[in-house]
Image (cartoon, rainbow, N blue to C red; front, side, top):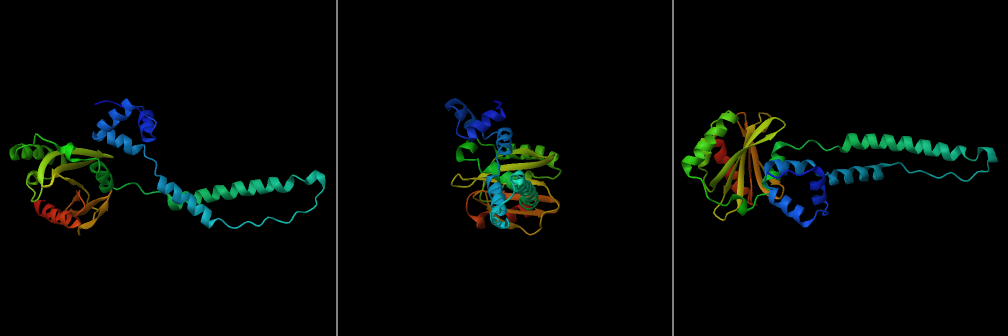
Length: 242
């Protein structure tokens, strides 16, 4: 795999990369390591804008005092005091802003959805695995996950394409990629997540339909396409297969 520096990726994200570097990065963006490196360099602009907007809207009004005649030797006393007070107020405001608007760490489901959003039908182009090959691969990942997931080689409405382990802060996430009859990529992601809700929740993640929930101690995410009823139906199968 081609390695890229943070400077090269930043240049690409800013539109300042040359044609060769841009082409190389776009081709490599489907690699999990490169995708994770790109994600780590993304600046949460929405959170920053929201933070500064909060400062502007909640800052107290300041009335400029009427000009007073002061002896020449004291003419700098008020401006310097005003500067000091302004600096102190701004520092306090920044502290409040950071405390109130600091974004929470991304959940594993959101990170998995960001990764899957990079998929296209070409990402999952053949040759395709046979059912026995799929079950063999899933058996390997079952050992790493601590749960038998070989049954996920057969999911109604989806065709198995591949499975791979992802890692997030020491947490293993098994991503199983599928396509529906129209070739649209879908993913079922599984990880130990006992804190998740038992009742499946259907929502939109990264512009895609998604259903997430838990069966026993195993958290799951079904993501792909734009039909939330379909991801919910697949999630019902996931609960049965687990």
